Length: 253
Image (cartoon, rainbow, N blue to C red; front, side):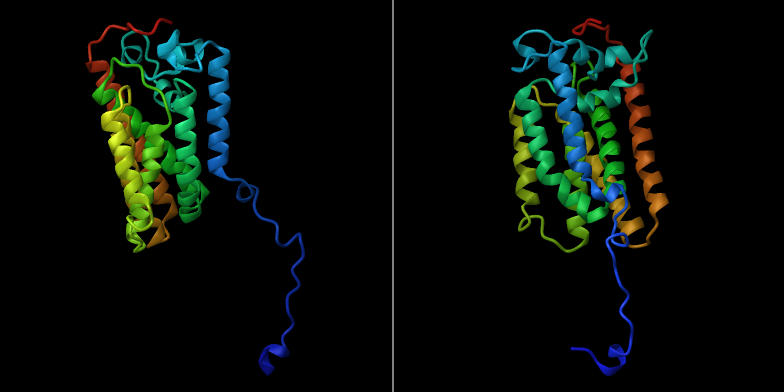
């Protein structure tokens, strides 16, 4: 039913061409990240990383050259790229399976809530913050995995839910966080520092998003804020690795 005024108006015709979405809008960033992680893991296996985990025998060439390992980030090495590459490596089949299931369920919720570009910014800022945390707690232990970035997504999602008046307990975010904290503290060979660093990075980026983008529509300052979180994490990680005084052992290049 239409009022007389509306009935006299011409309705704009929408065709398929006018309904096309931007290129980025047609794709799920979460699924792209899952695909990248899976492809990298397959490359790990192809270069010698055992499906049962590095503890079952050998590291694999890609693992050795990409894992986060403090001694290879100072002295004559300066392999700072490990801060990033380690976030796309996994030590075995169960490791990547758990992380990708986590990303599959948590990622779309945050991606749809804040947008793809902002999601990517938080993901990588959290990944680097997680690398800093891992080096802070255990610079001499090889560390790999997307857990730092994933905990950052969870932290940002908790902040967004809080700002928008959504209970983290009724939404399931609270129990999810508690379960992951318990796992981090009780299961051996889990990087507590990586999880904690990523989570704090995600919290900071989440607050920046809500204050700058959601409330004030300030997109560029938010992205610069995420860049600052990433930059501080990188500088702090390099400083920790350089001050550890640990000789490069445990991983042979």
